[in-house]
Image (cartoon, rainbow, N blue to C red; front, top):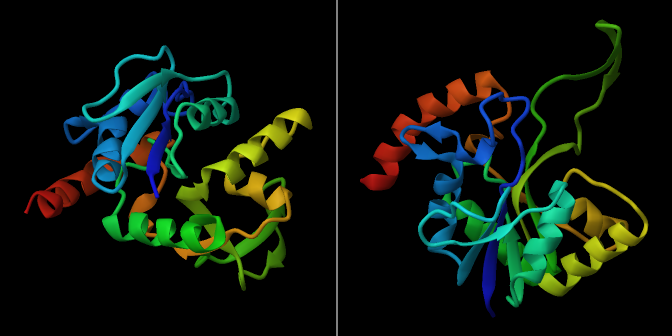
Length: 216
């Protein structure tokens, strides 16, 4: 069955402060180009949404994004007829092949799957910078991307969210709202999201080792 990778890259990158985040350069390549490069060999097509519908990296088709991430993803879903879709944030440029394979396998079995990591840090609920209630980390996962879905299922979830004026921070949570199961697939610590200047510095450091490994 056919698979499309969908990359929402229409955000402004306000917190990073360097213009549209997807076009920020790390190790000589934009975040978007790195994401597309990591996806291209595993799918039948890559569709990217940018702020103005231009500047697609090599090997990707481009559309114009929407006013929010959720609107942008729905536009991407309507831009392909693939049986399964793999939705991945351009701000997570270091995507191992093993992760792509595993999350697609999970979606083929369950209909929906997301990459995530078991929470390793101590968690505390604080207020006004004061230590409050300790929160058990047992059973808690930090959700990453990519997330993979049967396209008809995730499109149904987006349509329901739009009708009900519901906004989510990721796509798997929209499927969960329909009381449909979402499989958790173990991710990778290198799949951190580049959001702040300190994240960008970490990405620059990692790019050196990553590029040496992937070009070997």
